[in-house]
Image 1 (cartoon, rainbow, N blue to C red):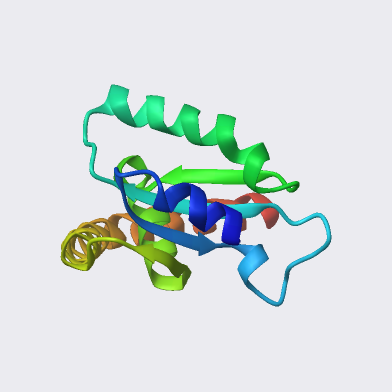
Image 2 (image 1 turned 45 degrees about the vertical axis):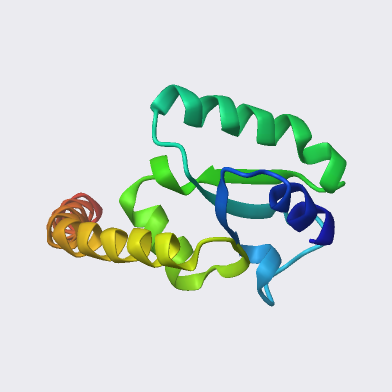
Length: 133
């Protein structure tokens, strides 16, 4: 974790860094990958893709394990919410910006949640009909 933190601490665009997933829980196994999420100061889609590529190319330097990297700015709403809710902050360069982003994600999530719930309930009903003929 220290090498990961050092790498992102040197990246000026990294606003916040989160560790999430099984590596950060009691469910960690010897083959668990490391899931990290980065909130960056860039917003342009092309810039975000370039950063993600740079981060992946650098990942063998900071871990022998597979490292999965999520750019929070462009992640799906449900994933952003899960990471912000369950992840552990490793780097918090700009707390005000991080809190602003978190508030935006919470608003987005609760706007999206009723639609997700409706889709899931319909999917469950469909599976139940198929399972029971």
